[in-house]
Length: 268
Image 1 (cartoon, helix red, strand yellow):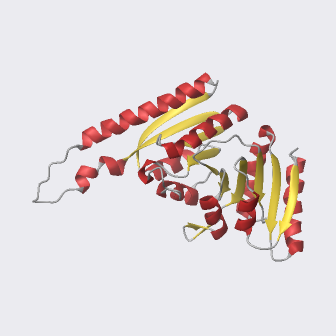
Image 2 (cartoon, one colour):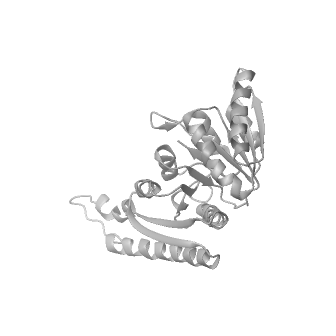
Image 3 (cartoon, helix red, strand yellow):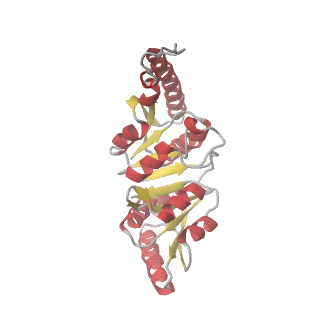
């Protein structure tokens, strides 16, 4: 198994770093640690070209690139050293480009992508999703796990299941994680028809139990996002399908990833 950790070393990303290392250890997975030098920052002097008006810039392109390289190398070395001390196989990747494009390219060769909810560009008080994270969620060919700022060891899982293609992929991915991690899964199915909700919940429960995973099926009427969020504890991994419609996430997935109290696993 290959786990891709994309980080900029910010406080918002540290929870993702620790969670990715813990998962790699528990799952005997290879950890791919990626730092992207944002080409938009490197091109700042070019973008500030004001024609005949000359304004001296304190930092030139070469200096910016060197500073980002130094920062990236330091972050990746810290992760490599920490991982190898834990007995992990770690590969570090330092590249230049648009962050979401580089992450998506490497995601094709990974089984799971781990990210923080935002990065350094948004500041420590920012509580939403960063723009890079949002783009990755909408386009990743690989399941994405969003980690909260504060690391907590996973103890259980909540699966939102409605039999859609993306929900099935989320269920299969969760099964690969839940069994080796010893997570008990609560399946949550929501539909205005309680019979249909029960059919969905039983379907997922049957699959997960056949994988040797302790599972409880729950069926509700009402708002799926509200039920999922009300059941998640900070130590629960909340998994759900994240369908993309017109380049935006489905409304349930969008609301859940922005308001979850713990880590969230999404699959398109």
